[in-house]
Every structure is written in structure tokens, then in C-alpha cells.
Image (cartoon, rainbow, N blue to C red):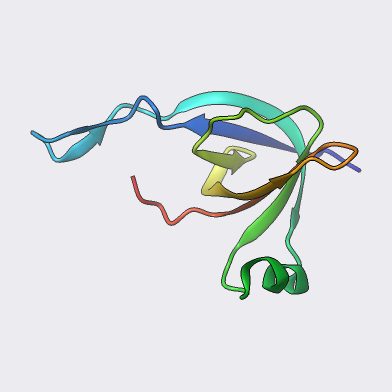
Length: 105
């Protein structure tokens, strides 16, 4: 398995809503970055997992354990942002299935 991508885990815990400006303030914080193997979720598997194929989902496999609290991940630090849909810990590696974020906040 080739780990030819890097995934970047971000947290929005420092972002707070300011009622005076009606906006969120503060930047997302980079929690961790690690090499990963990234592939698309196949059509058949997507239908089994989600009941449809409207998801733009990726399978992310990492060697070391991902952080426990994160809000979104970026692959090679490029848009789009992906959020966690499900995770697994098979015998080798750590597996995350992530889907494209809707872009709120």
C-alpha cells in the first residue's frame, strides 16, 4: 500500500460566534498531519454504506492513529474539506471513511 498523500486534521474548537458582528471569529487549528493512502469509495460500497451514491466519499488509511477530536480533514491541504462518516481499526492501519463537507461555518 502506497501512502502517497498527506492528510491534515483541523479543529474548530477555538472558533466562537460573536453576536455583535454576527460572524464566527478565530481560525481553525491544525491538530495533526500524517501520510495516508486515499482512495474513492466504490459505487457499490457507497450504496451499501449510505443507501445512495450522492456522497463524494473517500477512504483514508493511515499508519498511526488519527487524533480523537477533529472537525474536518483536508487531503494534501487542498479543498474540499472532508468530515468523518465512519472509522474502522482493522488488523493493519487505521481506516476513515470521510465525506465532502457542506461548507457551513
